[in-house]
Image (cartoon, rainbow, N blue to C red; front, side):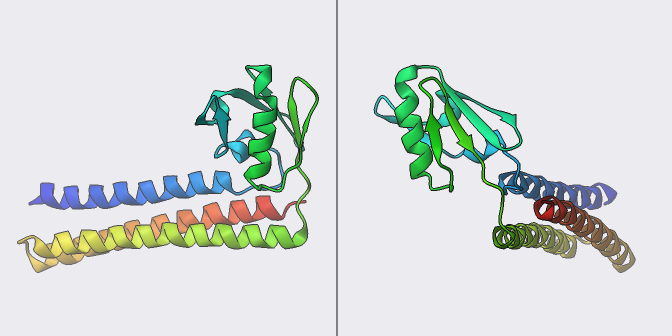
Length: 184
């Protein structure tokens, strides 16, 4: 019986950990004013007729906090990379110096920062929903078990404590991200 309860608790915890991991991944994609190669992660380049991720045709670096440099492995790809960055509509204006595509990342406006905070809050809420869904699934599995009412009640308390801990973790992650976004 205890093995089944342990399994329910560990699967709920695993789902909640996955929600936190997904949140962290989403937060990486939310720009906080500093240049990062991740900003260009979703850009696809026309590489000899097939759409290829930018990272597979060029080296993407950040020489400083406001600049991203994209150095293609083949110089003939410069125009394609520049075009792909403009088509991606990220608000960047790439410049080509004949060897490297240079992108100056503009500082965020107050309005844009507030939009990004809203986006971060929405992602945090998605993570909380994922955690609550894991709690709900654990409750369903627990109800299906044939165990004493006391054992079920104690396990429900454990599940709720686990949920509260992960919700607090989401709030902590959100606070850090908000501070990062709002810091000029």
